[in-house]
Length: 530
Image (cartoon, rainbow, N blue to C red; front, side):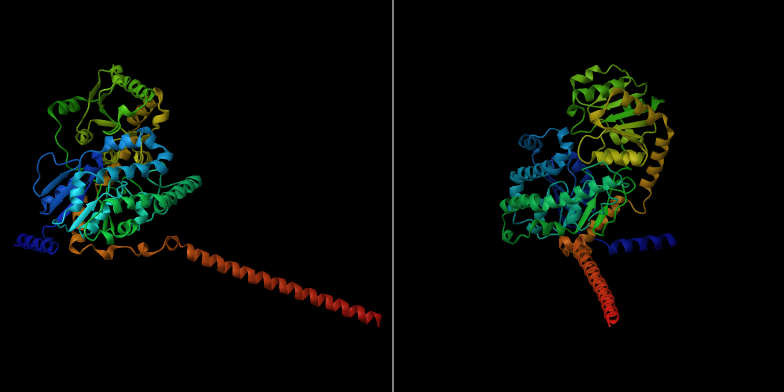
């Protein structure tokens, strides 16, 4: 009887928060699969819960999924690279992040907006959506305009953590004294004075450059391509970004660094970490028989070994050739791979990474520091060596080293000896395995699953028509008010006036004393003459 009563109570509580099947539009035009993969589990879960989800992306579902409709975009990466002439490793330079990244983003948006699929969606007069979800974080700001087009609240999707301009636009401006930027440098949350100087400068540089140049270019794209009845009243890009209802971020403080966030931000890292597919039979046998442990090597799917300079490849290959451990190496065909002579090395273009990392015989993960691989390493408690190449990978690599799970290496200074010594250090020193185990336990310790938390807040926005009460008041302030410059200026002026008045009083006092002294001396002289 008590069990039945408990079930009825739980059903009633669940019913209270039910949301009727909503029509949700998801815009994910970024031509890199890892960005899509971040949000695909949430898309599928929304569909499973009865919502009708339309996904605009270069990466459709491999098999049809009920309640999901794919609008397939062409993969524009080759065209964007040809237009912007970007060398992969050059995309990791400070100069690129200061100036080149925004041009890269504008070109991605322009190329996506001129596709037939986007044109048809913008011209669509019949479809109605209750919610728009889009990734404005990764230089894709113009797609927030679909919220205005369909008169629907917007949920911003972030496949890591805030960049300065996106944190500013959402009202979650980060304190630069202890929250490091995720792109410009590889700082931890404990920065030196010089690091804090750099962190602060480039944080505000990113915001300044966005507002005086980058957002204007993106807004011109909106004005040019978003043509529909009512588009003449479309707000400014900055206003639309500030009015996003919610930000869903694939981040977790167990992996990264603590930071203050408003209620309009929800973290969802680790939504599918528990789901570990069984290894293929041959790999399962390989892992089980590797009593000495397995090293898993992967530099990702986008850049990888192919993007490295010859001396970098030779250093890595020479170091791996010297290892006695079994090695699973994810790499595509490359002439330098023919130099691998170690029979313990098994090379394939793809491995089931999560399943390998979950196996107890995986002793080391050599990674480029991509966010998914980094989080999988944290979740499964695997020591890591990070060799970051571009973007946020340096930030992720620093997190690995800061939390004691492994060591970060500089790809530009890598040598055979340095990599060999680093591998030996991480494998033989038990502190890395112990730190990985502890951090894994922290990552897994949650009162509610990240998936349930993310879905709850997405449906919350639908239930409460955009949940405007979550919008922080800081978004209504001018930039100088946000920084308290007007208050600081007032106090400086007040201090100046007080000091000025005190100086005047002191001068007047000394003049009075001087006058009195002179007057007394004068009287004394007169009396002597008499």
